[in-house]
Figure (tube, rainbow, N blue to C red):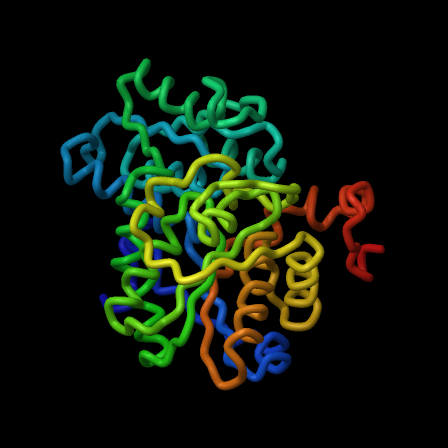
Length: 331
């Protein structure tokens, strides 16, 4: 029957674009947010999870409703998407997460049945880094390693779905797309899809302090400075494989106060509860709109819900300890 998704897998994607009133009015542009928090797993990472698992099935590494295990290293949201998609096909999931990630995401992973392995934060060069740990566990178990950072099925999922959806929803009237990168899959895949349809569309990477991707786009060298409270975005030392050949035109760096201002105003003025990466994306879209001038249509990603960061971004003590702004209703 039309309009009925068969299961989790069929419910991912086709999220609406929401006009962001304040950002649009301030810039004279149409700034639109793709409401990825409306995916069944609650984030944009459902798309990557589905793409990666679909490819594993096509290669015979997993068979629906037969025993199988997927291992992934994640800041949380990809792990949630992987675990839920695995549940829907009768597979088990082992999710390796840095212990510094929000308590809400870790608790949710456990609630949905994932085998959660917490590890201390380590640099990527360290064998104990969560990505390296997940690869080692997958090898030891003989399980499928999702490998979201370098698995090109991640970007391919966005090229096949996110980009075409944005094109259709805007009627082709999209002048720029911007979003932050963790794995790079969203920016790379969406960028390729939009460039294929309109070569002049601008694809701009948004980056927090503490990440070296801004420097990589600007200078060709990965160089990080500062730090950020945002989770799941930015890379300090390595460019993810999904960004190889990505059609990136420019990069914008956004501070934590700028990102939080958008998180808080979207919630209090527009009824949209989003996390830090979405706040950063909206701040980048505003900065890009001011560069381009009035009359343009700019699309960005509302990655996930603010409910996953209650203990951090919406915790007055956490914010005050770091000298960050506290929203009036929590002060």
